[in-house]
Amino acid sequence: MRRFRAKASKATQAQSRLKELNRMQEIAPAHIDSPFRFHFPKLDQLPNFLMQVEALTIGFDAPLVQKINLAVRSETRIGLLGFNGSGKSTLLKVLAQQLEPLAGDITRAKKLKVGYYAQHQVDELNQQSTPFELIQKLDPKASAQEVRNYLGGFDFRGDRINEKIGIFSGGEKARLALAKVVRSEPNLLLMDEPTNHLDLEMVHALTVALQEYEGALIIVSHDRHLLSNTVDEFYSIHQGVFAEFKGDLKEYEKWLSKQQTPGQDNPATSNAGSPEQKLDKKQQRQQAAAIREQRAPLRKREKQLERDIDRLNKELGKIEVLLADSALYDDENKAKLTKALQQQGDLKTELAKTEEAWLEVLEQLGV
Ligand SMILES: Nc1ncnc2c1ncn2[C@@H]1O[C@H](COP(=O)(O)OP(=O)(O)O)[C@@H](O)[C@H]1O
Ligand SMILES: [Mg+2]
Image 1: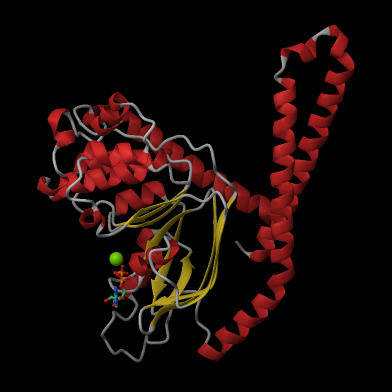
Image 2: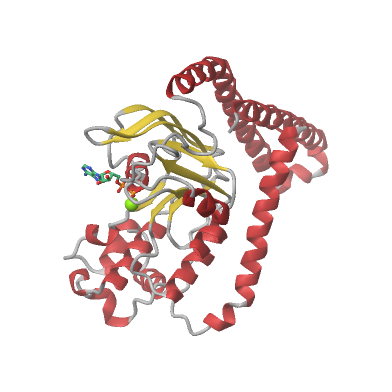
């Protein structure tokens, strides 16, 4: 039964996000003069499974964070918390393949499309290029008018779209960097402090756009309103440990205030770790090894079920194409139609069963 509760709680979270969205749309008149309004494109590729991170160690010369495990699925929405310097940006960089991990594995879905907004994204724009060129390069098939309309949503209008990026203000460059990421149609969005340099209206537009966004999201932000309105769960990096934080932002702050701040030497709390890491190093190692051993066959089954789901979806797709043909509804094709409908029913039942089994495996894996 637990999995239904897990599912139900995800659904509730999604619902409260929706409610919030409605509320934000109601208050939108206050923002009616806002020059900013944009949406993430509708996704035609959103695989259930996007990324599996296993026993990942990140850092530079020395490890910063170890044993990072994380499953990223289409519905994943994570707020990543931690002190300055704890390794949040480093982790996003590794997930975005901008930096090699020190150890561990990342498995990526074939159809994964990462949109990465780096903390210093603004400096990474080609300063010699123009907004128009930047967007057109991403989408060469778009007409000039479409590109102009799109840039209008980020308040780049008229001649501005043909000016060199180098002369723009920090805020304008941030908006442009955002326009670039949004246009790339990501199904996994990795955002590192996206509100730096943005004004309030633009932060609002971003919040609304992220609420509507259909893909998966991992976001680092000091903006509590943005975080609490766009994510469903929190993870923290604390003293080299990456772990889920089971609580809201208020609880996190309370918990944090009880922790040792970096640089302080406070033996009374130095072993505190995160709420879930009260074991000593050796116990942690043993536990991790035991968990890995237990999980291997489950992982295999998970992969198999994912392949099955994929296959069933494809077969269903084919039947649906068949059923869309109006000739099938002619009298002489009655037998064919009956057969197709029968197959469709069977496939749907099988798909539901397979998804159920898959959820069960996920539950056992604790993801
Ligand atoms: N290119 C780099 N080379 C060496 N150390 C780095 C580099 N980038 C960041 N660091 C260090 O790694 C640590 C984590 O940085 P970062 O991931 O940016 O933290 P956060 O985003 O959580 O504030 C910091 O101590 C930082 O100084
Ligand atoms: Mg950072």
